Image (tube, rainbow, N blue to C red; front, side, top):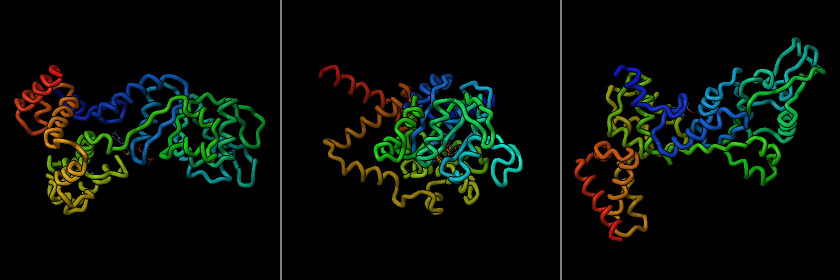
Length: 328
Ligand SMILES: Nc1ncnc2c1ncn2[C@@H]1O[C@H](COP(=O)(O)OP(=O)(O)OP(=O)(O)O)[C@@H](O)[C@H]1O
């Protein structure tokens, strides 16, 4: 096997540029592959740093559209510049318009217009956007020419737009236009199996450090409110600050790189002890085995490696679970 295929096997891309091994994420990727080729608007919902922009890029690449991807942060558009930025303007259209300028609709024609943080668009601009999406036509400021917009709209938000619609902060008619296809990208805490994979991927990119299994475990059970962006920043910082090439959990703690100052195993144990589960040890033992077997798609040796036990332990327990199910 050459380096390239080794790398691809170690860091599976479920969509162009999107690394994951999580079962739920793979389902989302399958859905995106189906909808990418359609013209329908896609709405991406996910917490900050979960990869919304990366998904938008992947959708554009898979769409096969000949035009470019134009990314717009709707929260950073000065109110008085909305029209000139989106529609463009002719020379002399307003004071300071010293030359003709095309706007986002023109630039994204034949391509994809990615509207990030769409929830931050004021109501007055939502109405203008809706008009273009309905008519598929617009004019530059100061011009009577009518241009056609045939681009694809992908929008994203970290807030739940349905709440904003209920509170009348977001137009319901625009919401229906934008979310023909809705994709919810889960936060890292709902796909903890991706944390070691992504951390190793970013470490590999840095070419300066290697994360030891104990460091990966600590990272896996830490909190990442900034999601993948925060995880990437942490690994990038480690690549600069770590004294040793091989980074251990101890080094991580010394550099205050993970939120927890208690051992990850104690943290998990504390959470479990608080739960109202009968026969906790056995329940968690079985759940760990079943989860590892599921994550490895039934590969018992790989599941055993993940759990750090002998393959026989897995086989024995699975047989007991099966017998129990048969006799019920
Ligand atoms: N699955 C992934 N594989 C590889 N890199 C990822 C993945 N998800 C996110 N990233 C990386 O994490 C960083 C944050 O991703 P991105 O900017 O797409 O998030 P976002 O949801 O758009 O964030 P925000 O809401 O703050 O704008 C980027 O550097 C991106 O390349």
